[in-house]
Amino acid sequence: MAGDAAKAAEVVLLMGPPGAGKGTQATRVAVARGLTKLSTGDMLRAHVGAGTELGKRAKAIMDAGDLVPDDVIVGMVRAEVEAAERIRFLFDGFPRTAAQAAALDALLADQGAAVTAAVSLDVPDDELVRRVLQRAEVEGRSDDNEATIRNRMVVYHEQTKPLLDYYDAQDKLATVDGVGSMDTVTERIHEALA
Ligand code: AMP
View 1 (cartoon, rainbow, N blue to C red):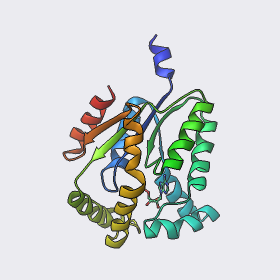
View 2: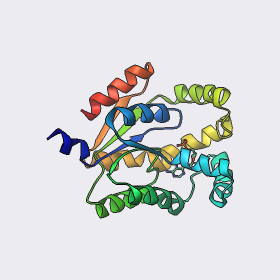
View 3: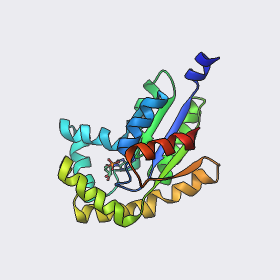
């Protein structure tokens, strides 16, 4: 039944290096598929903006382009997942480490769910730097400067990219060409998830 299908658990991970367009695409895909978008970067920025203790600790780490500790990130995600009526999420920028991926699996298993698909947005490095510096001008994010972005790329390659193999080994990985108009890339993601 359509009603039952609409309620089925679905967990999509939008992965890719900084500047790949995860945030924009995550919003579009989440709306279209009726998923709740959870961006750990947005959650952290909300803490920074509100001046919470967590925000104060996270700001220096984010400004350096390093990763916020796994227990902090997993704690934030756990609170959202456990409070949700239905397990229908699109994660943007999470998981970023093997420990986070394992914690997510355990968290979802507790709810009788699992990751449905991991979409990797593929964009060449030189295009990424160009995009991030352009975003810095438009949004004024304090972690969008050249030194930080370079470190974020290194962190991505060392800690997050290996997760693609983890999801590929489970036949859950879809690699999508992230170069093209926003609409084109959105369409490719929908096709990959169809
Ligand atoms: P984003 O908006 O996803 O690019 O995240 C901005 C910054 O927030 C990152 O460079 C990290 O410092 C931090 N951050 C966001 N998500 C995570 C995560 N899953 N694990 C660790 N740090 C994160």
